[in-house]
Length: 86
Image 1: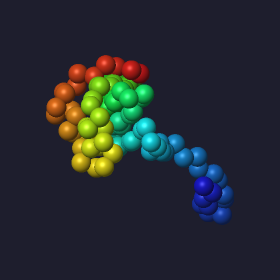
Image 2: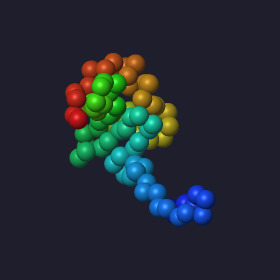
Image 3: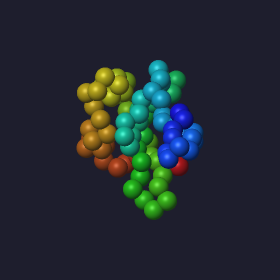
Image 4: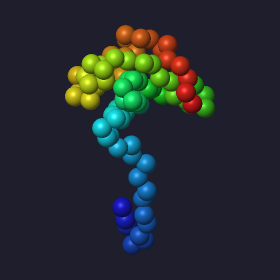
């Protein structure tokens, strides 16, 4: 995308994550289908950041994709028991 400020043009690169058939992104969480295994991933509130994941069931994955479930649902159900992946 090209933007202009005070007559100066500059390009903004998008770092937006795009949903596709196997990945669905919320604000600070996501769900993934990896060869029939389903995962909820969330950002860790640690210095330096990080990400953790919890294996979920297919119906939860589908519920997230259609808007019925969000990150709060998973954290209430599973707590912060995820395995750190980054």
